[in-house]
Length: 396
Image 1 (tube, rainbow, N blue to C red):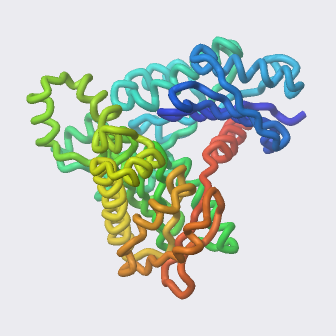
Image 2 (cartoon, one colour):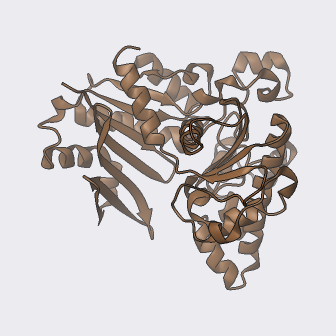
């Protein structure tokens, strides 16, 4: 009999669940906030149903999922579930390996929680809820969001602090969005007839954002660092900032390290720059209405992405393929155009007419004859987590 397992992906602003039987996805549920209120969209047999839920339902989503799976006759009871796989965002060599979540794992994860509260906190709460609803003996596998970046060479991952401190504290770049990058690279290979170009740049642009250099299928550099705070301007995260500015802000705003961490994770980025919203769609509306700070936020956002595309092209010695993924990469033709503007020197030249009518589709939007292909690719982190969970559950 084929194993039945649940895949969990908790983000900073949403939660996704998928139920698999063997290698086939049977059920999907996406929990998110709309206009400040929680909703869930369930998909069964290709049919989508969206409904409003309470904040308590959102917090206890695993219980709602279990009830829904039983109600739809996908499982008879909780004992029918073989295992659970969950995406884990955490710095540390230990978390570069996908593995069974046991007591040691939880101990180290709780220590890492101080470094990445925005992503690891929700995941740890989910693990507790899984145990509450499915029982403590349910095997749960942690699938690392950094494992794909384990191939980044030392000269690209170390910060210029005393090397003894880096080694003692395990303080260096780990990179994140690795599951997404692995997904879109694999899908791009299929789109291009089974062969991936040597030099690939992947832009994962959602609430969080990163740019990754992939050479011969392996990660060699990425914009996120020790934590997911480094790199691009994101929805509410600061991205790159001078260390001296951090010290200055701490002094002038009289913020403790913990409060400063919250500030950089939740009050900065597009939200901080615009003073209006962290949502690209809303900022574009504000811009149309003449709001200068919203325009500034969008310009800073696009500029930072361009800078990192340039950096990764330098790392790779050129670029053969640019992949745009994540909510913004897939759905915002306006931001895709702004990001790709003036990158002709890298061979990046998009077909504006094709770009403007491409939303939520996987397609090559590069202009005919341009030397660098530009693909819109839908990331499928769930599928990657499922593959790894299935492998681990077989003891491989």
